[in-house]
Length: 249
Image: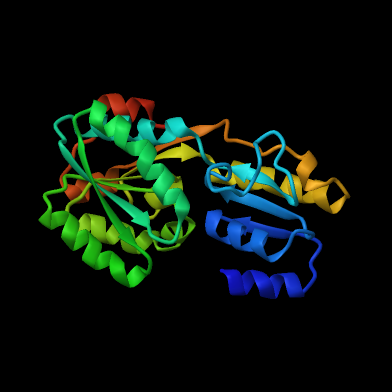
């Protein structure tokens, strides 16, 4: 990431757009002058990317998908989908600090619902198969996939492994479920990306990034894939289906 960011800065662009926390951190390290707009980044405050949401400081603005309540909400949805669950795996990216923050936020909610969590960290797609095999060996009954831009890129492989190992899965973005995941609960990524493009427009017209507050999600969606539920031999509770914004049949 750092090498790529350095190459971008050398091209002297009018602005740099980043997706996710690792590339944003790399861009920040590479330039203090070129405006950086985060599109759908994780928790920029805890990552040390910005000074505050209202006053980002420096040369960075953008949107964040983070909300501390989202991690606990996904655990609640998982518990409603699988009322008897007692063990769940959590998949995170070693290279993404946001995975650590999401893991920290997920644990208290799981303890309240008597769900024991075990974290599995990967860095490359080649490590996914081994992680899912290990999940199965530890008697995991479901998998929570933490928010990560690279995971979204690898989503078809992740979804396939979850089905292969008979693990109901929950994600932060509907793209996973559209490509075969079971359940997602999170912000509307399309809407958030549109919002980031508005910020790019303002920056290109001369507004300083430090004067543009970080935007947070306001619209959330619950998406369920019934085809995947059938493949898993899993019945989605009617109460959960009734609340879903999108049901894929």
